[in-house]
Amino acid sequence: MLRAFPVAFLAALVLAAPAAAVDCFTQSVKQKLDGADAAFIGKVVAVKPVANNKGVPQFDYRFTVERAIKGAIGTTATIRAAKLVDIDAQVVTAGSNVDIGVLATRAGAHLVASSCSLVDPGSLMGATDEPKGSLIKVAVGFVILGIVLAYSVRRLRRRRAAELGS
Figure (cartoon, one colour):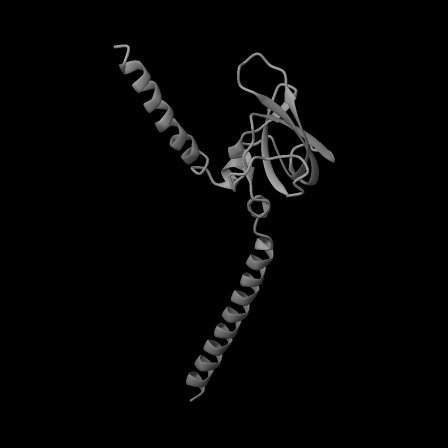
């Protein structure tokens, strides 16, 4: 029994890591954006450890906000998280001067995120862009339809008039 516990524990660790990694990719950026309280594109300027008694080291990541996407975000934002790893499996550090798309949720007074909440800035911008001009496209379609119908009715009337005149 004592030997089975370490084996089960190691098996759980080995199986949990891939499951967590897959979980990051089950939702699209649009779905993640819909579930987020705040979203922005920014650069990390500072990383400070946070004292806690939960056993998991946490950090405050301070970002300069290049573009606010969702939520009340100022020119800077602080995100509390465990060690963040970007989409290229690189640890997020201060001063890297790389734009990062961040999706965060509110937990009390703090914005919190995880490595799964970091996305490519282009993907985040693409998820926010709704198709534009739909109403104009429909209006132009109705105008073209009206022109085609008017032309068809005119031809039918001329044809009937020609048949009745002969």
